[in-house]
Image (cartoon, rainbow, N blue to C red; front, top):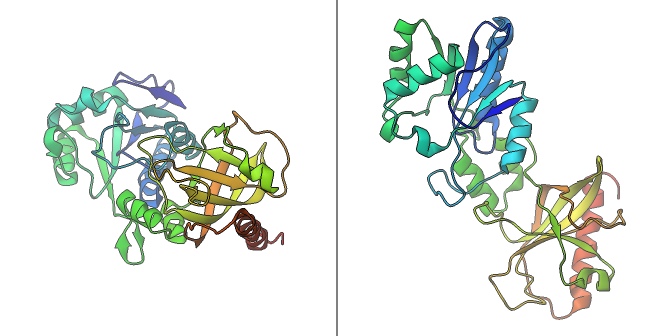
Length: 306
């Protein structure tokens, strides 16, 4: 997949124009996949190039809410859906374009024959453009417009906001259903205080970067991918109240009972599958160790390895 950081004419080779999926696509949830998948299928049927157009926001920008996945994972997911060209200019570079300028630019630079979007898609300065306006602007250009209905979960539209709310509440099954895949993190393993190793339950320590959505504090059934192998695991997210009085220090620690080895500096994938219990302060370290071991036992059972 070719990635472009600014709007520029695409070299499509022997392909006859492009089908372009447009949207912010944070999280690549089931609604986003419907839009992207529609463009990919259209492109295959019409010997066109499947293209995604989105935009980049700096981490500190609050316009679209906290991030659900990293930029690298977003790229991996979009490429896995069959996309060949990925345009991701900075938001600052396009936010001043009128709706008309935006459409003309996309059609010209992408050699677009078809544009795909969700029914809540907006574009142009001050988000003035709507799907209906998109149809009106594209009609004289001979460009097909396909507007996909919003995906539904429990009879309500799927959105990244709903996914963030589910994560905040510890409702992992709902978040995973709307994402269309397990919620996961891929952060570098850092050195901690080594308490888990002392207790006989060594953990990998991953820190959420600023700007990422945190799930509810507590204990989770997870599974961790190391060198292509998936291991049942138990993850504790929170401030470690038993051994730490600083509520600003949030850690994500995962115990992988069937793995032994050094993962410092690596970035294993940790998938979240079920919320077990909230964080609590134990009376002693033995109780803390028992909690971790019990969570690991339940993780093995959950994945049929108990």
